[in-house]
Image (tube, rainbow, N blue to C red; front, side, top):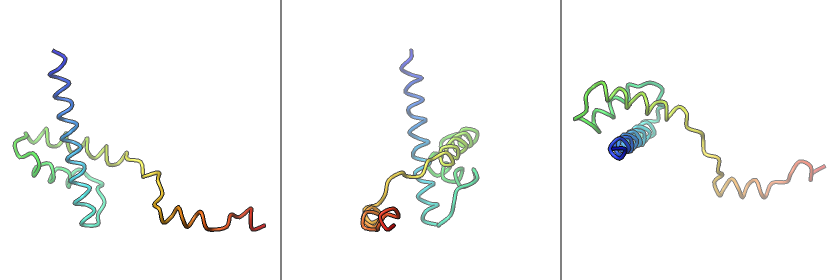
Length: 94
């Protein structure tokens, strides 16, 4: 009995991840930020035309929370790493 709800949760998570990926790709292409539910609802309607409106809004609200709570990447690109490695440190200059 526990398998069915777990499968439903996994599918919902996968759907929301797809929605977040698509919405971020569109926002990046249009050079906009996602700050409201409206662009997410539009993407959700295209991705999941078979879902009820209430479920689409729930997906969009959850996706908005995921997008707003993302942490920026904590990695450096190779170029920035080489620049910071080659620049003199302030304590070495003194």
